[in-house]
Length: 297
Image 1 (cartoon, rainbow, N blue to C red):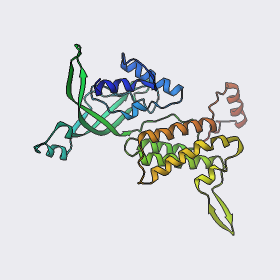
Image 2: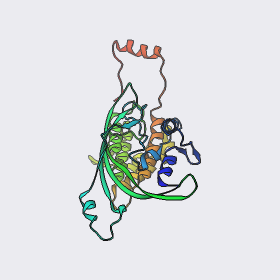
Image 3: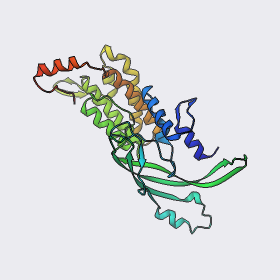
Image 4: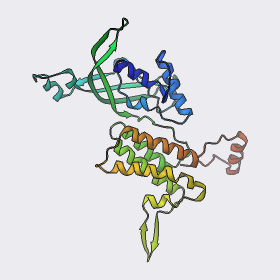
């Protein structure tokens, strides 16, 4: 099986050992993403695997969260880097030495959205091995691309709409950095955790002799009230991943960051449960305020 076919199959994987057929790839991949959302796991392959220009990645629109981003016709551009071009003169040059930079525009497939997203990143060439219809092994050079930036940034998971602004801000900062700097992305998840504890009114310092003695994150996690003490193990895991992201001696991968995202998603689901509210309860709140309801920031 060639790298191209492997990439296609991997993108349709929802859980280990549970794969969808690569047939009708576009619709199936979107279904796979929707299943991942329903069962609260991140469709990791969509964010990790490189892509080919001819095979549109299945990135979900960051604005409507319903449509898939499609590369806009004639917007995809790629060029070899300076060093890559110069390397062609080397006597041992090989196509695998090629390095590209790319940029493109993407548009949401949802007719009610049509958000525009820009992306840029890097490209490379690898030898792809596969079998033809007669089962004879073949090989050819294939060009793949890996994103480094998106604007507006993709959302690696959907956090509850009523989380505090400070928590949301750090998670968005993490999403922005996910593709280009996993370590920085992990550190921002850690900061979002600190802000979450503040939102839960966990104290940040003790006062002794009129001096503030600030508590570290571990100490604050241990101060969780009894109703949330079952979250301690989850929060400590985020802390360790964030600490690793802050130290250059430890390497943080995209999988590590997505571990932090999945744990944080679980935590936020407990702290900010999304309950459906009836029209009557909403009306009662509006009538009490005699105006628009107060919403959490």
